[in-house]
Length: 134
Ligand code: CO
Image (cartoon, rainbow, N blue to C red; front, top):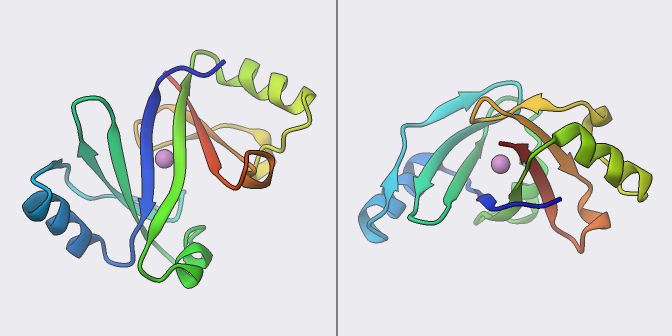
């Protein structure tokens, strides 16, 4: 079911500081910031030769990463995103196996204009998993 790692996401308390650190201190190529109100985050992508890192900052009152940052105020790894060929087939297979799909189970359009789903971290060893159809 799983293909490549599409990205690893890191929640940060201040996106401008994190962007500058990745650019200047780590010497990485970083995209422009992109607000995703439907997901409650502002995001930038760090472009690496083999994958991407997504830096996430809370956007709005009901941001899903606000609670995460309340527990980890310095920031931290938030989720890992795996590519799948067919997100609905993947979802059905996972649900049949007893895994919990967040948000009612219908894919949303993610930061790359592709359908995404999130899987409950308690079902996968404490790690929030995002699936992206590519
Ligand atoms: Co993501």
